[in-house]
Length: 115
Length: 111
Image (tube, rainbow over all chains, first blue to last red; front, side, top):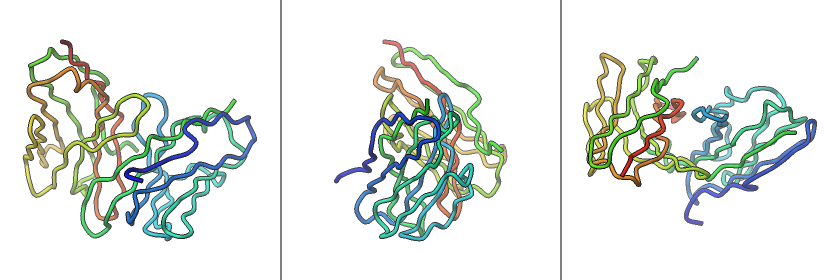
């Protein structure tokens, strides 16, 4: 597709349930990022992939959060045993290169509500 | 540790006037700065960027100014249009492409 695609757009999960959020980056983009955006805040960095390699996961808030990108394209962010504080919009972004600065393109996000 | 700060949560200007959005950062390692615009229910959209080797970058109605000594950058929109009404995020990165974002400023341009 032409842009970054995320699914589902909206997800309601019961506390304790596991969820999986999908990101389809722009074809050929090497870098992929996940961000968490709480209401009224800017996006907070979670993790970064360069192709299939997860180079930085310092932003993942706990070991309940796990991300993968096994073939260097589609990525999945998994949250186990969801808690209410996990409610947020999860944004995925991709960018073309790693060797020079370039802008990242964002998907529309997945709004997760934990009840 | 909030490394990128946007201290004004909102800004309201009249159509045709200048909008000035401000951003401060604390990490002197940042060497590339970006502004993103976000409409409701959409992801952020890239607007304009500036490298730390420059102090100004202009693209049509949008100009970004960088003051490295003050660790401050600003986005000027002139003339402002009602379609510019959105939330604007300042972002910064270095080396590893990781971007850090500010909390955003909601701009309202009144007709």
